[in-house]
Length: 370
Ligand code: SF4
Ligand code: FES
View 1 (cartoon, rainbow, N blue to C red):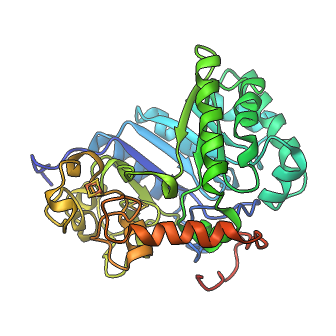
View 2 (cartoon, rainbow, N blue to C red):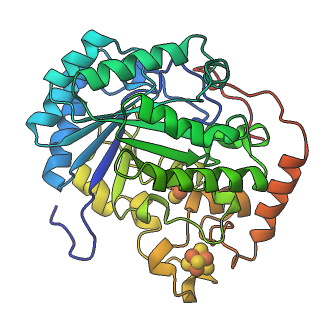
């Protein structure tokens, strides 16, 4: 189809190659109902999707999961993306990679690796991941990545169990040879919402972590780039989630559903199209789910008349849905939202009590949402 002039082209595509993963992180952004291996797209279909992505103008492909290394055809997929002129970023737990596989990926012209680290202390890191020995294996993978000459970013998700070591994670990333570290406070969708009472840090702890990381930014300028995603629930204004709905990126699930964001399926009534039946360009420009919250016409007050509506696009639709029950509402993280009191109540209720045990993410029937 011809590209409508009023709709920008996407720049990035996040490919959830599989929901399979050996780890069980309690803040995983995958949905509670994981898609099974038997239903996953095959190699040829993924390759067709990536060719269509290149034609659509997409530049960056983020190969993610679950654990993308669980796919036996990962090297083939990377090689196909390189041939199509796409920049590939592998988002991995590291489990499933070794020196040989990293070298193969490098030969297939992988461009970049983002490695998750759960904590700077081994015992805590393994407990958060729900996988004994994960931390040690990740250190080995980091070494293989840098020895292969691939640029490395360390991803660290911050929450109650590791909030005191946000600064230590930056130092660990430097030690591992990363040129970039993403310190991202947990976003409460998917499994993280189920585990919110266990994960949410107190405001005081979150603020201490933010100050520590910002101080390190100055201290290590020129050594490492720090991307800092500050905690939503303690913010004044929301973030422009996904850079605005259907403005910059799309997600393809393991079975081929195309979503405007990873949590979009939590919004009832949206119709998602699949790459099995539709071309990627048709999905981007015309599918109902992408049209639902594109631009600003769908907004209600206070966003509708707010001067920031083209800056943050009303924040996150999925968070508005989860906390207010209506995805059109302003993200309640915003202090101008009439529902903002709900966020404050969640913070004080959840941080006042001892953290419960994690519900680990596993490939089995998901627990009921709490
Ligand atoms: Fe953003 Fe809406 Fe809040 Fe304005 S009222 S700052 S547009 S979320
Ligand atoms: Fe869906 Fe923010 S996660 S819009």
